Image (cartoon, rainbow, N blue to C red; front, side, top):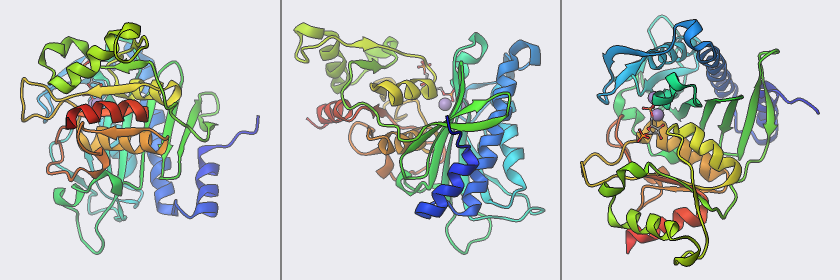
Length: 333
Ligand code: AHG
Ligand code: MN
Ligand code: MN
């Protein structure tokens, strides 16, 4: 097999399609390198003393795991000095992180969920890192939080790493979705899928069913119809999978189709679900659309939502197009 490394792919993509300027390539390579470091820490587990929780809470009011903080630090340190960024933002930091004055500044802004699926860390189930890249508005000094509040369709790159049986990096720069597998011996990312397409039809859904009693009626109806199986209105049996790491659930859907849902529910009507728009839903929506799928908040395309706050939450329905369209149509009825 001819091995195409991440670097080779990025350089050739720039040569052919002019979509990855040198600074963006550097950014992607730095993030990918940081993910390697995180993967290494994750892989050590108890031997590296990285499991368990800390005493601190993040802005979302969640107790931070040790690996949430370690991963956040790894990404910050890796990305600070290269001159490719104007600022960063993270699930684990209340405010944005401008590039310190001692370093040159670049034209991009990076957002990340350093460790997704935190509840799975200590039980050795797949977890990941999600990232999103925006352009800083032109001609400005140090960016503000306001500068980050761009709709997801403005992303110039997005991706995630999944730390599972294999460590993989999934990337889009707006020209399809590529997958890279980490060759642990060589320490390099090798392209293993070059044109990911989400199968259009599916018999698999992912939702945290323990919240069923709190669901709004369109979600209830959609799930009930699937549960009714062959004898119900959908005339087929469905299967359910829920890993509780969005990266792992999305990764399964990229490979064999399906729909992933994290709806808002009746408990806190103003909260808008659990997942965060800017560093979870937007990058995943960009990837899923680039792989031929769809992503909505039940009413509109996720990538068209105008963010109002950095840590804003959003209901998420994403995956195979026909299913996302169906559950979205139920919300409109
Ligand atoms: P994070 O670990 O970054 O806070 O995100 C966890 C998210 C997401 O990965 C997953 O889909 C969902 O939370 C799991 O929620 P439940 O606890 O409801 O299963
Ligand atoms: Mn997350
Ligand atoms: Mn997280």
